[in-house]
Length: 151
Image (cartoon, rainbow, N blue to C red):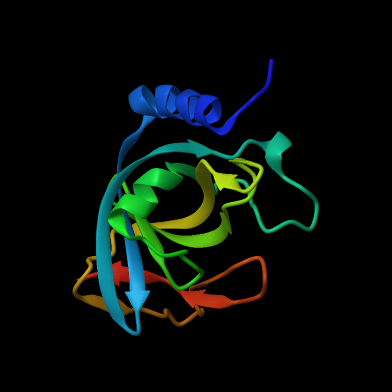
């Protein structure tokens, strides 16, 4: 029995169908937020998922999105400057992994690690807030992100 791309895609479609929930991807296009509505499977990382010295921390979320959904919406590869809104909370991207869930060169799904949980970022207006104690988030690669709040 061989394992092919269509079988793998079918497995993910069956899994993500009932487990997926609405999420919003926000792409920062040179300071303008572009909003994409899609569905994905959202879960928390467990302690056993963590790797010493890795970028994932306890409390981060794992978002799993079908590659075909991203392509259908025209969503580019998202990076650290982009966001996801999940259940009214805003999360910064810590890691975008489009290699793990593939069959050969065929992409099936993307796994995205996100961190945050501030108020949801509105696609059109947002304000930067840095408190007196320097309330900031630091991603795994040392990139400093200030907490963002909806207006």
